View (cartoon, helix red, strand yellow):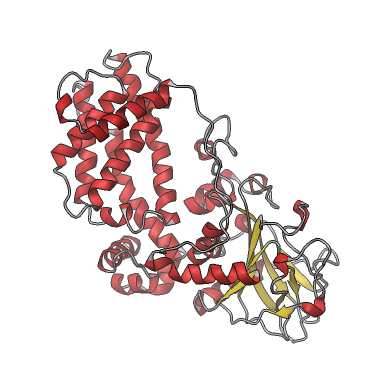
Length: 488
């Protein structure tokens, strides 16, 4: 039975853990601090990543309320109203103990960047309405385009406030509000004759850049960086573990991460997965006596925590361009007597000549122990560097031996498959495959998943299945971000 108020207590505890440990968070520690069972914590948030995302969402919600402006009197002058709104945002961020972490150490984590990205999307709509009100009152000139001006204004506000909050010696709140307000006035071409001497040269330059950005023709966005297959120098302390994983992945074509989910979670995943397993293999490639569950996200939430695990996404952040996607997900059970699966490369159907950079990667999670007897996955180390003249042969492959709770991540260019199950028990696994944002996904999540199902997913998982945009506009729906379609 769920303890009343356990979820708010868990979020309070997680926030305290983040503050006490300089941005580091473990779900077990948060559960102990909250005085609840670890299993209940997993029930509420699914994973450490889900817990962090929930904390961030709770932090952001008051900002949305300030932006809506329900507490600001409607009879105020438009300029006074907007400056009051700005001051309230600065006060909230300055006063909240999580702000320095979210603007600093945690700012690049997927949970923070995704939540703030979604927040900026919703604030854009609010900001456009506010500017239209200013135009209706004759304060903002009619030739200003709200849809072009507001994203730059919001970006400027965010940068200025975040830079201020991470400084050891913060600027005075009133001074910061006044400087940002001068930027807003300049961007909207309001009267700048007063207080001009209070604006720094840097802010004036930014104000001019803002003005140019929405009065000049749109510029071609810069080309996304190529996949980075070398380690980054001067890594942050918390990224050292992922850097080591990535080094092995690039060198060998695969890497094994042992014991990164707990036995109780494995047991829960297996129990729910077994209930969904029915049909055996459909063809020779899938191997006889093999059970698979497709369309996983429409049937269970139990594998979400694996699809968005921070160790996996940390590797993919190094491997792919921003905005990469989930390509497909399956629950796989290799039954006793199952034959081996033909070796393959996940990138093979893209048809590019080899050797080439990987366009996809797979995470294969051991829900049961993977042994040489029970049909463990097999892999050919180094085969990601082969050309088209060489195909993987089973005698070249080695079994991927790992305990339950571990995961193997392999590049889409690496030859791999499944071994034979000589044991008297099944071998259960979860596989999530990912791809570059500009490649077609193997699963059509848009047809598989109803809008109600998608609304229940975490923001990160929504983005991974395709409710996201690859710059400048790949993935749009009617010219808008696809998340807007969920509002219908």
